[in-house]
Length: 214
Image (cartoon, rainbow, N blue to C red; front, side, top):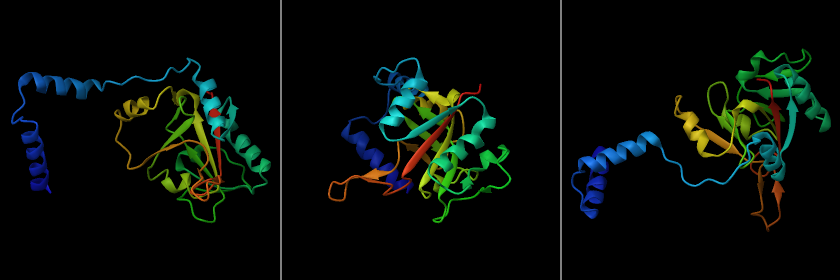
């Protein structure tokens, strides 16, 4: 593998007629790697919450805003009742501290094909696109994001960012996850006879619970 890599890099250097970098070039490259300059970005209003809600609903996602973390079970219950779903959820282990009703069936594990509702904790929300960002970990398997037909995402208002690039900046301060999912609305496709199918490759409903508690 190393010899193949060296061969490729050698060919690139020869094509660029560059055998060894001069000190100025090395300094410029190191500065660029350290600063991570960002290209032109679309303008996003200062009120990230309003923009996020607008973009999320535009892609058929739904949202409920709650003032306290303790309100999460009530918001989840409202969703379950709206779609006549049983109080059975599979959740990320981050949510073990939530005081779920005793009569509910709450499992903390990877999602299975029979699961109807999953609840995840978002790393961030992107106002520019109305997307939620989820990181894989032993406490939050990626299957939670794709197997159940109904995906509920808990998002802290403090974790809203204006642009996609801000996600990579935040990630540099921690170990990089094995998988990162940027989810924008429910799963959909129009590949079959150009007819829109919702839930074809993942959840047919994406519901965000936005927690404004500071």
